[in-house]
Image (cartoon, rainbow, N blue to C red; front, side, top):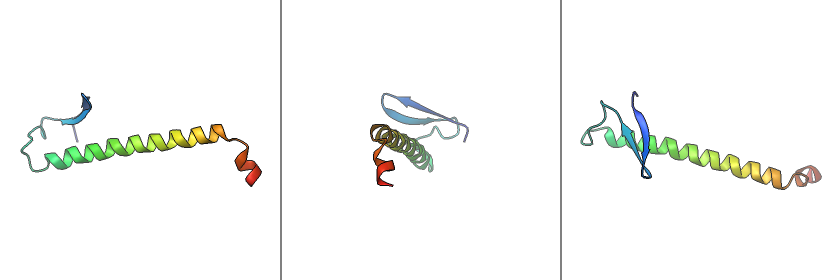
Length: 66
């Protein structure tokens, strides 16, 4: 894939010379895949952040339970 994923006013668009046509057969699939990848990255980052925050907040509970 030789395109650029750009965030413009909150919407994610796939910019590429090959897949620029919106009426193309696979354009929707490409955009959906890009959305899924970005969302997965956001969810993963969020989970990591929450896990780190929980670990920082309660450092002694896990050791006392074990």
